[in-house]
Length: 490
Image 1 (tube, rainbow, N blue to C red):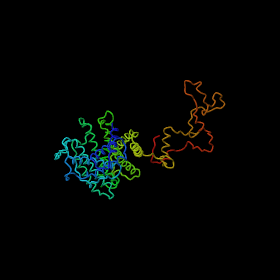
Image 2: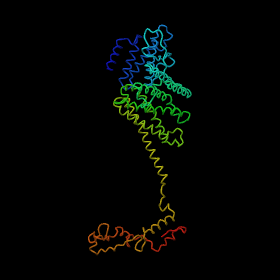
Image 3: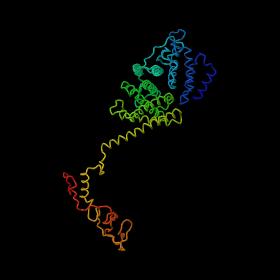
Image 4: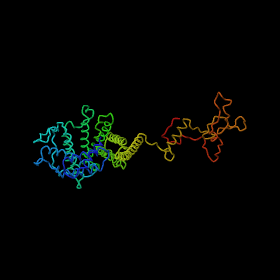
């Protein structure tokens, strides 16, 4: 049905002359832009070009000027023109920002007022005076458009300041931040962001409108403060910008996970999943890259030993782990969408590389910390080589081995401690077997110990074959070799 509608709208525009300021032309073009925008999950250049045509045609028809002072425009026509211009201005700002281009309409180029907060059935063509606008806190069909217009216009001022060729001072940035928070505070109560647990009785379209407004507010904070992320590592003056930007980015990633889960079959927002468009996904990618870059620069500072334990710009471990968890959740979402969208495919590839670098650094850092902790708990043992050991310590170890029977000097050989009969080559029943001479197998002594000489006894016999080795005698006074202050129980 949507494809048929889009095709029929295109046929109407083809039959008409879109460069002529005729009635209903702008409304038809807006419907066509919406139809083209909703059919693709990626940013389309054709949509941006069409929006440019719509903006220029609207300005040619004078929509950028408020119709109040003009007597030839009826109250009904004036209110409709305000509504149409509000939508066009939002399209210009959002699609231009998505493409990384400045908007066509600047804030100083228009003075058209916002629509009034009234019901649709209060408007009719023969009306002489417009009804008084209802309080912004009252929910009407126009309240969402008005609330979003306040945020979008503020976002336009932020984009102008961030993309200006002349550097914007930090004082001006903080004024814009203060003004942005004031606009957010004036949102109607029914459009304030609430957890899904507290919105059990709210319709799904109202819930999605809340997410849409909150994402726009968070995106404005990211665009306003992101260029101070690097400067905040050098001066504490910009610490507020870094904290605000990271807080907004992590909140956007949480919204991404919630919207992804709730828009699937069986979720509460499955009926309005069309709200999640290429404009929304660009917010998710912006937030993910901001968090990635912050963690990456922190890792680089650690790798080059440019940080200290008292670094005021360091995140607590719990906060850093939460940021990493949010990134991994976003990566899984992009992975599930990469076969449906080229932008999702690119986002998944970019985030995979960044997250892999951060993970490898964190693993290496953890291994270094574990090794340092183990080294502190168990210091390295003293080298026991003769060249590095004091003489009294060497003698102490030798006497300790003698006292336990590990070494027993005797006249036959220094380490000959055999208690087996001597080997007689003339005895036929005692044929050598392998390394153990005089071993005849278990044959006759099944119920007692086998009297087999040690295979090492032939190495240290009375005539071991090392004729040039002078073995010390057994009359050595071992205690006299030690320091007189040392005593050893024997």
